[in-house]
Length: 265
Length: 265
Image (tube, rainbow over all chains, first blue to last red; front, side):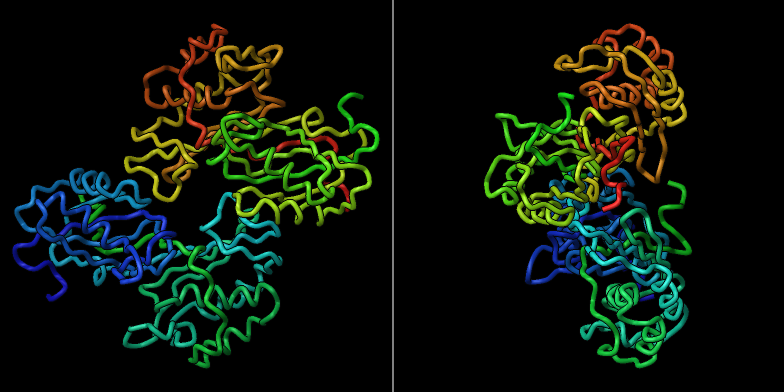
């Protein structure tokens, strides 16, 4: 199993919360600070400076937030680790960055944060009112004109299930194919906020933001629900709507059949 | 009526949302920037620079947030005003401060944002988990040890109703007496968050934060519910618990029998 921890390595699962505003996303980039880099550097305190490598269940983009992203860290086998030590030592060294480890647990045999994941769950939040956000600035997409939630849900229903999502895939997407199965895509209202909750085994690059940008056209009656179905069937990125901003997107949770955090300590 | 708008004055009601983090609170202070001052200055664009004065339904403290604070603005009678002009012009000039006017409406005859209000509603939010807040930093009080919600509610029930709240009143409080009627004080859990929702005709200075600081002692089993009842009966600030931090507090809404925002435009 190429995905399992190599010999001489102690693999740990971590669940992470972060405010993505000031980072280039999870993965290291030349253009700025990455969440991955900050976590790997903070983990050095546990290995007397020997390198720690990480793999994530979701490579979030620049500006995207996380409430429950899961990753794994590969430590040298002789590092003295415990659930509390891994969580607290990394959190201590992450300060004052708005990034924290919520839980840490030893990975089950053969477990990999990316390849063992069976679902990812995202929430996209729109502030749907006239005045700009004061309290939620940076965490919402601000759309002034009222959204027709029922029409958005009707369009969303065409996207649920197994489809070729080429029309909702970023040009830079590196996935081998665009076939994905959307288990959920539900629109709900909470005061001035519109939430778009979605779950799938995996998503294409920018898929959630491209779906949201397209559904917003339906919410504003610029598109019909059927035009979204047609855009999906076209398998052509230029036929779907624009990419919604990163601010409103948050990776909520990642699912595993053998969840490291649910095993007895 | 000394509280009504003076002759030659056009009074407007505004509903305001703000992130209180960077301000000394609503009222002008020597120590920093006040929300009142920013709003009054932004409103000058509507009067060609002639002064605009304001009165608020709640003089929030430094660091306290608002999701629906109501105030009134007294404009010179000849200023050309409309619901849209008042909201949008002030919002334009408030940028980039995290303060915005949600609604503006002409005040009914004799209406005063402070004296016509019949209830104020606050929410206090505690993040009750081990790891520090990354997404909600600045909007919650972080308490690591698990809170016993049922015990907190039992203690809160002693505070509901009409009482002399001297034990929960800041030394600097300028109210004539400490008799207040608490209509609601309810504790609820939402994931890692504990919400304390409270409503009353009016509150004493620091009353909500002092009640929350005391209820947290009960939640951590350092106090019994009966000790809160005893603290209330002592009518002595030194007998109640500490003041909870400002970060977790948000003024949610203000009620009026004749609500200016509910009248036809």
